[in-house]
Image (tube, rainbow, N blue to C red; front, top):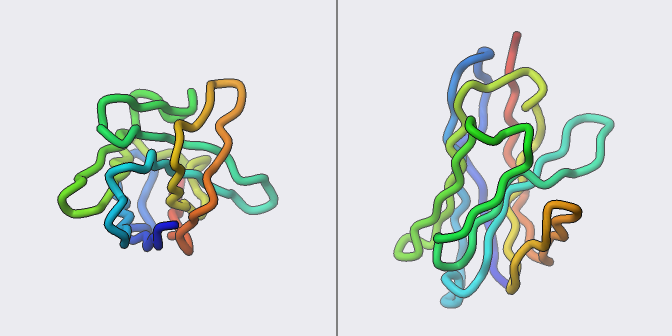
Length: 125
């Protein structure tokens, strides 16, 4: 497993931007697919975006397409989530996740076993 630490959350007005980072420890980082999930108060944790170990394949939940961009830097052992045009409904705790295989298909994106501690994103209207 890898150890994951998120950062970059905060309070932003609707229409604003934030960039989340997730730093991973472990020599095998580049062999993991990585993803962001989020959990809003009173709701289940949901898939947001994923990126393959090469960075060439990405996937997004429909509600963030065109607004969020996931990327990775395998030299720095870090993934990012650039979030633009934020909406109040994006308010949630955002979690980084690592998986040794791809995250499935649109019908169900199953997470891997490695999670970060989460970072709070709050979007005010």
